[in-house]
Length: 201
Image (cartoon, rainbow, N blue to C red):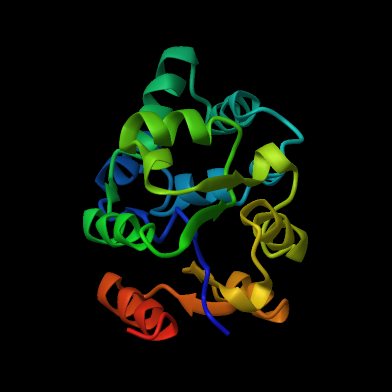
């Protein structure tokens, strides 16, 4: 079966937090253990609700700030600093851009309501792909197979004609359960090589 589309995750794949210094600085300021602020955000009930669009992202940040005991001005600083260590994978982005000459390219990302605005402003992400699905906008989140079905429908391809890339194995396996080819991101080089094998290069 010819591959006609390749879908990518964002966080942990195209955009990765490689420097945690700012988060560690906040942990020192707050007198909490290392890793606490990351856990307070990503593992919160509010983050889970924001991921499927049940609450706006602003409400999630406000709730986390209250739990951490941050006043308004510090809450804004914390939000800005939290993702200060992000790095956009230029090599992978250039590879994605090159794919568009012969296959369709999409994004399937578990993300909060402001993701499209923020990521397009910071990285011009929308210019690299044919379609982007953010979980908060469609009220579905990986590994729910319905988000993959929606992505396939929007690009007009069958599961057997698509490859999905994610750093989370559970999400890759969910895509594979539909018949999609799966690549678990471990490094840029490994991911490009696996995609090219599926494309017969």
